Image (cartoon, rainbow, N blue to C red; front, top):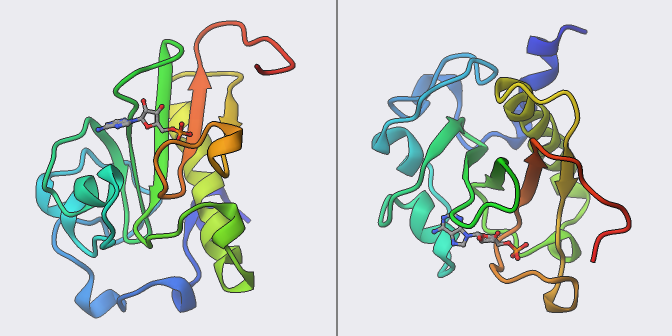
Length: 157
Ligand code: AMP
């Protein structure tokens, strides 16, 4: 399977058929895009977190990639030279909120995370998903941190 095929979301997980794909999104979701506001907001999740507001186009973000399942944008408080967040359009709270129906979506988020890391020229990077306040989650809309561009210590704090 090629990378391009690997990036294509399962149609059963896609909210809209190809015929009513939101304007501004690429026909092939593996294509890198510089999302315009319409693409960011299209098919947006509706929840009351700051990420929900970003998805609805109510507040700006430094977007790097968008497709009909997710959005990737730069973290406003970067912890490394590259710090990107990949979020689903669906308003999942965190992994504790995910079920079997989210398997394809979760896989897609990780593939997009790797794609964004490669786009940024990273050879190694860390992906982090904080689930719950005890783990450091502060925005309760699931997100994958993609962090790189400097040596990263282990174990994390
Ligand atoms: P977490 O602590 O895992 O919930 O991560 C939330 C992340 O969201 C933090 O790294 C914040 O810096 C980041 N963040 C919060 N608000 C924004 C925003 N408006 N744009 C981009 N990143 C944000």
